[in-house]
Image (cartoon, rainbow, N blue to C red; front, side, top):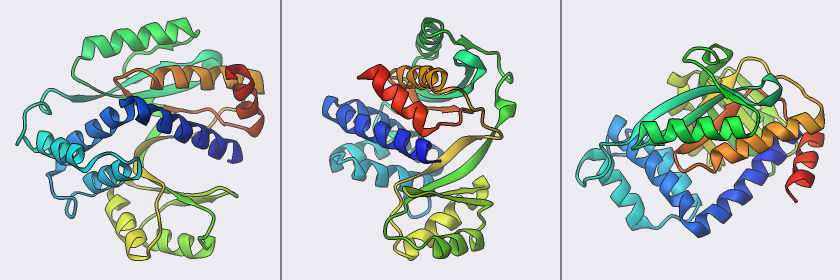
Length: 253
């Protein structure tokens, strides 16, 4: 778990760099557009939109860009209707399964770029259904461990419908059925708990451990895929250790 947390911190630092280039805002806007299109433009009744807006604000996305993204999602402004959500399935090196979540206005471009990146790094694209059975769609919340009582978070989460709560020195993670997303989010907000990350994610049913050097190669593939403009997030069944993250940092230094 600690390795997983350190990997998340690396990704957050990268997001800060992406923000300077404007790439992060594009991804955040797409999240907002999709959420508003699917559930309406009122964050009080659309928890997915509320979380997307909160994430955008946490990354200093300008207010006018947030408002425009909501309007594109609801159809008040043009530009949101052509976006579609797609999951591509594939394998990284060493047999690690991946679900690649895209939001794109060009399905053919997204597929071509993902296939090229996987082939370049020794992975492969899978057929529909070849990987998805190894993952479960779940509500997910990540909370900083510092300043939060684990027992209180555990009680709150379980009462609101969570199935599992995981702890380490860096973060508290909540896993729940999708239908419990709003209830848990509302309870956390009412308790004044600051959420680092929240959303509906593909959670691996089992994780695979690899030697640090091989695991670092997989992390490099994930990073390369997430650098593609159409890719929002990559889910993998890799068990990320501290040693794997250290090896990855050496590899990319």
